[in-house]
Image (tube, rainbow, N blue to C red; front, side, top):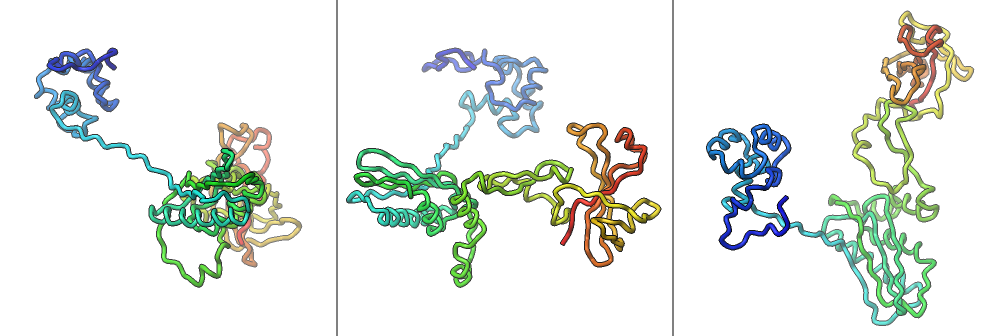
Length: 362
């Protein structure tokens, strides 16, 4: 905010030198700056010319430094302490091996990678972390460096799994005259809660977890071939999910969705049903789907879903969803497309609403 060379010399009046700085230089909140400007305080010199008691009364309920100009002025002039918290750089977990003699054989390289994975597991365990992305660097005698990167579906510090995944990426390595140093670094790490495991169960299911299975698929087929469904911000069922790479981080939205209100299976596209008999309120009591007649024993609803006006045409109509169960205990997710008199649908609004089946429960 100040001019070039705005450094106070010994014996110089700090208040006078700083008087021309704008009040924004005090690092105040936006609402406080707005109040000061409305009161006519644009520079620090304007604040110095006002009685301290008047400002203290005006901001008596503001205790945070960023909300009280008096505290900031005292800190600027050295009349109040302002402890500074240092930014401590967190070093990425790193382990390495400087080999006494260069190695050229693949089995020796695999053994070194296994040793590094075990060292990395101990480092991660000491920090309470698990690795999501690892980097393996190989230094050759001729000065060339090779890098292999690994991304996992879930944070892990299992040395056997890390080793097996890296070994798949070393098939094309040409050691040349030999490799003299190997380094493994944890580029992306996440906190892992400590848990007491069952030794026998861990031995029985070793390496068969879902995350390990996904990692093997990605290593074999490539990251673009393995995808998983995720939620998308839309109330329209056919738009409420998207497909992303299996290794992409999970968003917080996935943990807050209420899944029990949606069927286990959503059809690729809604299929029309023929209503053979309906109650006075229009709810089907008997319908035909795929040539088979179903008697409705129970029904829950409706759940109304309106069209997305920013995306849909004006002809798209409201939907009323129902969870129904037939006499044999099979459950369906059906909806009525359109409501009489809703003012949507153009010419279709003059016809009775259509019914569709969109999902199935188990």
